[in-house]
Image (cartoon, rainbow, N blue to C red; front, side, top):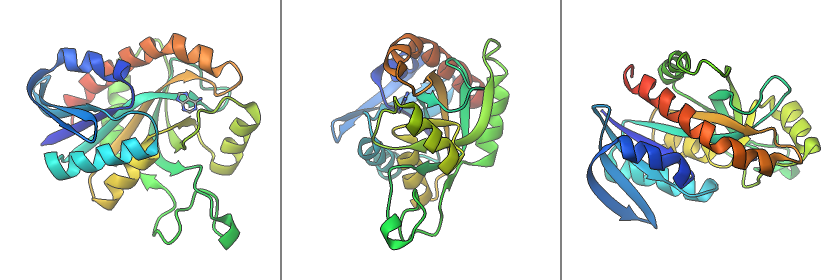
Length: 230
Ligand code: ADE
């Protein structure tokens, strides 16, 4: 089984590459794909860049060129709701693209027109594995719920309230929903796991800088636990 691991930022992927025994490197669409062994599992690790388009292109390359059997997207997200604080982890049960809007045609916001699903559901056994692996993160809480994605860094309390009331979202980020979309189109099981770096409010960009290193450590621990199970 080959597992594709996508991070949006180099900070998120650098440590994983250090842990890996890299067997080959392939560059395509301005992205570097590192194939090899990570804790004895066959993986392809890649930094996709920020936003839904970069993430979608990356996921499709993993499917087409590397024939990955599973996709895991790790990274940071803005937490939605008072219970979720920086350092916590949200495992996506499903994902929606919050910036998709064809309400003018009567669709619900987030619905991709003419698509047979509203949300993209993560693989249940991968969610379970992630939940188990989160037991390794003693200091922080973990949650399972909806993650919403859009090409916007959310730093606005009103917008956060809207994401909560419209989508019942637990976290917001900028790639997961499009990776989920590509995996859905290709019938590849996937999961999105995000560490909370901020609460998507006015100070979000400052918390973000501070919590990225914690998020990176969380991801490494969770992935290590998961790869031993899936
Ligand atoms: N990633 C981390 N924090 C975020 C935020 N507040 N909005 C969008 N993506 C994020």
